[in-house]
Amino acid sequence: NAGVTQTPKFQVLKTGQSMTLQCAQDMNHEYMSWYRQDPGMGLRLIHYSVGAGITDQGEVPNGYNVSRSTTEDFPLRLLSAAPSQTSVYFCASSWTSTTNEKLFFGSGTQLSVL
Amino acid sequence: AQKVTQAQTEISVVEKEDVTLDCVYETRDTTYYLFWYKQPPSGELVFLIRRNSFDEQNEISGRYSWNFQKSTSSFNFTITASQVVDSAVYFCALRGPLRGSQGNLIFGKGTKLSVKP
Image (cartoon, rainbow over all chains, first blue to last red; front, side, top):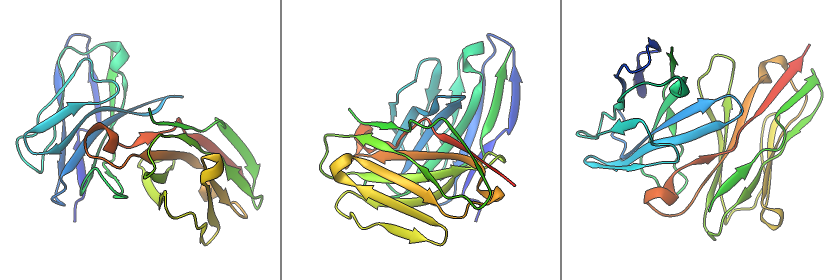
C-alpha cells in the first residue's frame, strides 16, 4: 500500500523555469491538497481538490497551477519559478474534506529556486 | 475565519520531564475537528490524534495525553516522561464542518520540541 507518493524528493530550479511536482495516491481518496512549509510559517494551503475535475485555491495560490483529471493524481505546476517559492511542498489526501477524516501526507519535495 | 495559534515556537526539556504543547483555536462553527500531527527530523508528517467538537473527553495514549476544553478554545498536548525520540515539530490543526474551503485543514505554525538526554 503506497499511500501518497510525491516526486521528486529534491529539485533545484533557476528563476523563471517551470516544473511540475507530482502527487499520486492509491487510496481512492476524494480530497487532495498541496501545502508548502516554510520556517516559522507552519503549513499553508496552496490548492485543493474535492474530486476529479474540481479544484480551488487555498491561502497562497499565486504562482501555482493545479489540475485533477483523475482521482489518483494531483500535480502542482510552478509556472515561472521565483526564489520566494523555495520551500518544502507536501501533498496530502483524505477520503473527504469533511468530518474528522485525517490527512495522509506524502514525504515532501524540497524545492530550491536560485 | 478559522485560526490556530501555537504560541510556543520552541521548547527544550531534559529527558523524563513532562511537557505540554499549547494550541488555541478560533472558529465560528459549532461543529469542527481538531488534529495533532508530529513532524520528526526525517520530515514526514505523522498523524497523532483527532477530536470532534462535540466530544470533550480527554484522551490518553501511552505517554501522550490531550486536553480539549471548548470553554477556552484549547486543545493542548502533554507528553509525560519525555524521551529523545519525542524531539520533533508538532502541529495543531483545525477543520470546519463543510465541504469546500471550510473543509480544509488549517495548521498552526508548529512547536519545535527538543528533548535532551
